[in-house]
Image 1 (cartoon, one colour):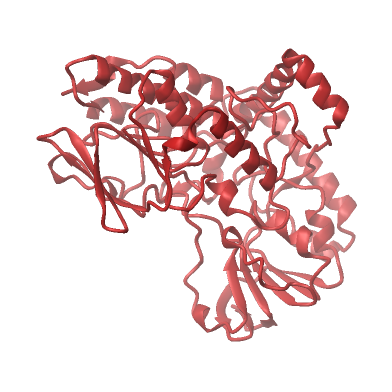
Image 2 (cartoon, rainbow, N blue to C red; image 1 turned 120 degrees about the horizontal axis):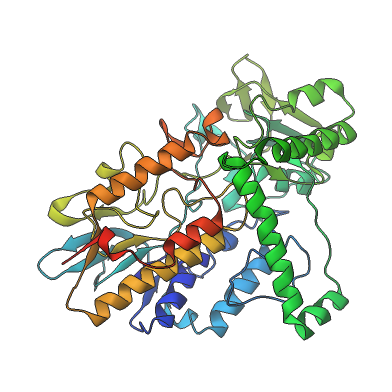
Length: 480
């Protein structure tokens, strides 16, 4: 069995398969080390916006987090240590960039091809490439003409000196609100190009001191209790965002009040404050957490530009109103191809069916895992499994457990392959799109959409999703 991707999703899937007694597992990773987004995103200030007691594997709780919201290096160290302790790193083959996967009906196997020209076979394939693995840089006129250093935040150039430089940042999303405050005091001038103002609320971070560590190590129930209470709080937010709770309006109103209070306290310039007010309902785009984003923008050498970027020039950026902004360094904080699932892999299923063709109108998958016409191909963190609140690791663990049950059935029975029934997948998708149409995410244009469909997000609680995946409904699948 082959797993593509060695981040939280892929390594967690490997462990779930092992728990079901499946030992013939290979994890193919295109990079030279494991870690996924926490390996790639090394920009200054990189950290998680989900509390660490919850943003961790349920089978590897960590009593020694340094903060409630841990930084990139600590999360990456945790991932590698926990995976190593579980014996998962021995399953990984690095430097393996998968470019194609094709189903052979005669042998009931997948042929996996990598960029170096090698090929291998697998009875079952798990895609764990994630939704945030491929950075996006807009195709602006003159982009390649810039004579300074230019890079995406997920491909940070630590060799580029920022001290005393004029820096232009395009984008104000989840990465930018972390790295902009981290570099603001180092640069001579900072221009932030904002297409859409985010809601940025206070981040309730705290340092875990030695006493906390001793308490968690001596009494694991306390650590589990903190994880459980954090989970239930985030589930309230999930319910509010999905529009299926009486708490929706009061909870989101309270979050909005926290945003407004922070904006007023930290931004003294009324004109700047007006530019930082979002023009969409709170929650429709990702709610961001930071205690220093607004402070960073309210500085004399920092400028927030709301005019759209028209072009990149050799020594700066030009906006649609004709204004020109000089820069020595250009940083793209423009996010990822989140809705373009598996875009770098050509997947061919039964009877030559192309997955990219199937998903032309927007990606969809039964339980976010399986697609009709693609036997024994399953996704971790696939379509409609992203969250507006809570930890994605809980979703991925549920998916890994479901996939492992199918793998176990293949190993134990005369059947060599399972795929979802078309009518079941269609019914599931209809349910999800109906529920999503009532969610706050339907109220504006956001990165959760692909055309008219919301393709990334799950419209409910993690608990509901976990319950639905706890046991495979075999009648929903067809065996061959």
